[in-house]
Each structure stands twice: as structure tokens, then as C-alpha cells.
Length: 109
Image 1 (cartoon, rainbow, N blue to C red):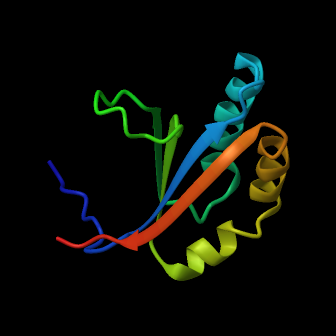
Image 2 (image 1 turned 180 degrees about the vertical axis):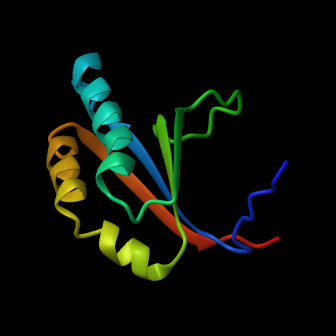
């Protein structure tokens, strides 16, 4: 079986959302679906995963959703940020977001 090589380091783009108290489940689902569609619309995305908070520590400070976007380079991130699909996603999110937290980091092993 052939092994697939992986890059030594990747650039992670971690995005956390909290939503306004009056955001409906349908609106939140639309945001989830729209974010999940971005990897199919933006070739610069190397990998993607997401989930909702299930921590028992109760220190999420209202953040409920975490999205992890992986890039192979800063140039790929530079393509992603102003991309029309990313901008359209931001416009969909804006009316119902309470807070957004973004952290980017290069993986270390």
C-alpha cells in the first residue's frame, strides 16, 4: 500500500462562533452548511473540519461552534480571506453572530 506524504507543517485557521440569543436553529444551520461548502468553492483550502462544543468544563464563554480550516501556505490563506465565497459566507453570518474568535497558527511537532 502506497503511503501518502503529508506536509511537515500546515497553517491552521481556527474560527469560533457564538450566536445572538435570537438566532434561530435554521439560521445557525444555514451558517453551518455555508461554512461546510467553502472547501468545495475555494481550492486553497487543504483540509476542513468542524464541530460544536461538548466540553464539560463550562468555560466556552458562549462560543458554540468551532471550524478548523487548514492551508498549506500563507499564500493559500491570502487567497481564501478575500475570496467571494468567503465574503458571501461572512454576509450570511453577520446578522446572527454574537462574537467571532480567530486564531491562526503553524503546526509544530
